[in-house]
Image 1 (spheres, rainbow, N blue to C red):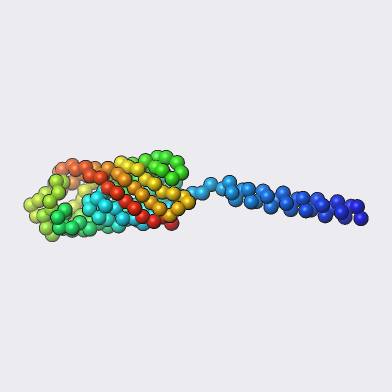
Image 2: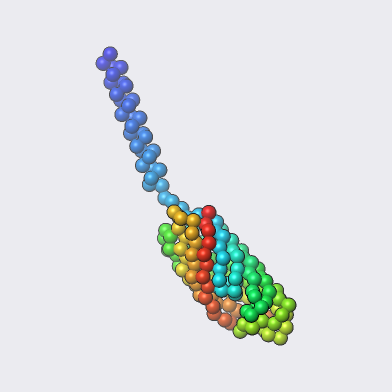
Length: 170
């Protein structure tokens, strides 16, 4: 009888230890930032307004695809943005450094300094990102504030702007 009691007691103790180990390993597991983001950007790489999707290829490397709309007063037309960034930092706050290409289409002349105002626009604009990125692993929020330098191939001009982004991560 004593050996059965000892066996049951050891079994109960072992079950408790294993359960506590599983629970503690779940709590200590690192929470990773979501890989996908959808956001709107005001000014910035999309010139005026843009809708963007980005994907974190690795923890610090981000690929981005965006579409922009520019109202008549800025640069009437639409564009497509491809962009890559590298993130410096830890957890939720990052310094973002990146470059990309904005391809724009417009039938009317633009009123911004980095395009040729002589007629319709179709061509590439090299763009960069130097900025702050907040992307929480615990909340589905993305916020970005950045300086965005541009170089227009078709007008051979440079221009620097700034942008703000807000969106959803998943």
